[in-house]
Amino acid sequence: MQLFFEQILNGLAIGSIYALITLGLALVYGILRILHVAHAAVYTVGAYVGLAIYSRTSTLLLAVPGSMLSCVLLGIAIERFVYFPLLKYPPYVPLISSIALFLGLEELCRIVAGPELLTFPATLPFPSFSVAGVMVSGTTVTVYAVTIAVLAALWFVTAKTEFGLAMRAASLDMEVASSLGVNSKLVVDATFAIGSAIASLAGILVGIYYNQVYSTMGTMPAYKSLALIVVGGMGSTVGTVLASFLLGLGETLLISFANIPLPRDALAFIAMILVLMWKPTGLLGKR
Amino acid sequence: MDYFATVATIIVIQAIAACGLNVIVGYAGQISLGHAAFFGIGAYASAMLTTKAGLTFWQALPISLLISMSLGFLLGLPSLRVREDFLAITTIGINFIVEAVFVYTPFFGGALGLGGIPRVAVFGSRLGNSQFLALCAVFLAITLMICRQFTRTWMGLACFAVRENETAASSMGISPVRAKLSAFVLGTGMAGLSGALYAHYARFISAGDFGFPISISMLSMVVLGGMGTLAGPLLGALIIGVLPEVFRSLMDYRMFLYSMLLLLMIRFQPGGLLGEQSAAAGLLKGILNRRRASSA
Image (cartoon, one colour):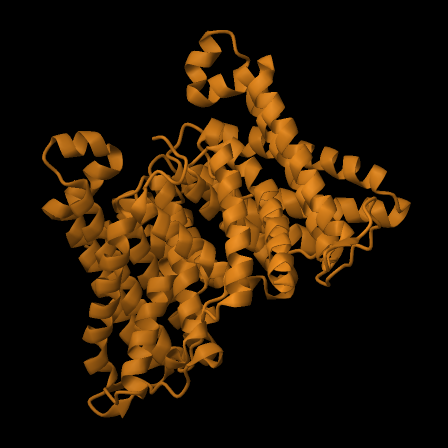
């Protein structure tokens, strides 16, 4: 029973990380209808930049904002120089460019930082503790705390501010929103900035959680997060978060308690195909 | 000569698969990111039939084609019902699942792969490297002929119509699902053929040969050459196949160069080298026409 609870906590932590990575993808898809595969490269870059700053200054107070800033700039650069000029083409053109960009950035990380696995020996503000014999590590608590903070902030921005209203309007119909006075270019920039900042947080968290940073750390998240936004309902942020937590829990529990002859990474895609057959719009999709 | 034959055979085999992908992406406008799965299904089918069931390559070939085409039909049926954004993702999923099945099923040799696949024999004599290259070239020629014929059939024209505008096409009485599915089945069949040739060429296959990166490199061939053109996939396969030989000294930067090449291509010339409105296409057409005129 103790093991079961520990696995639940693990699953929730992995689900939180999936949610943080996939949120950016869902936001971008919601507004530009582009599958932003290169988002996972932004996440990898975030982890590397965070680690680089941390290993020189040994404080997360500089590493986190520094990494977020560089990811925001990278995200906006990708949007301005690659996606925006390609919006007039059918969707597979930006998709292919995104995959190419993803592979290129991943390779760049490997060439710059080297192919070996780096460790991320950061100390976290939360201590480890145990409740009724169930160990809860400080890293796990940090993952929960960051995820809750990000989700709350994102909910506040999109639901309660005027800017959030503009974002929602632009995601419904960008042309109509522009004609009604929404600065759609700014909204798109901001969407990429928010998504990329969250990706950088996710990168640093994963680096600390598994204590490793490597150039291909974004490969599985890149494709798994695609499956997650499909399961959640394309562009639905709530659905995406729900799908991420379900996958994190499902993966962890199935791997530890059921002896299935498939790798854990294939589960996301099997779940996706099952969901699509049952409900082609995803869990919370409307269209 | 052997070096040349090795490089050329791989290029020809990949060109066959790229032609198949071109039918799906270029003709019917359906993005597939899991083409390597069907390449792998063809390879595994032929390898299993020749090593475990004791058939010859020629007996196994029609069965392998049938297997890859029917799996293409079965996997295409649910995938093609969804919108095109979804299709890209479901095909990625198919690729990962098929690869996982090959790795995790002992029946398919598991992580160790399948070895001891016999060479192809014609009239009882085993083919050497250059003879096998000739055989692959014959298959490539047949593939190209089928592609060309397909664009002239009713179904081929229906695919073009669906690619341009699905709603308009269905209002003209074309069933988009049927058109897409026929393109998908034809394309996966060509991938299966290419896979079968690959298995008997490499003579040892493992799941890693058919992973997602291979799908990306096949898509790069089609995009580089020009989606929807007849010769585009050929040119793409040639470029992607020759580049690693040219850049052998830059081995470490190879993937980076590839991806940047693909990015620049799709960013500035989404139609590919031989696509419409392409500068290179005009130049090449001029040269080809002159050749044709002088040979006639």
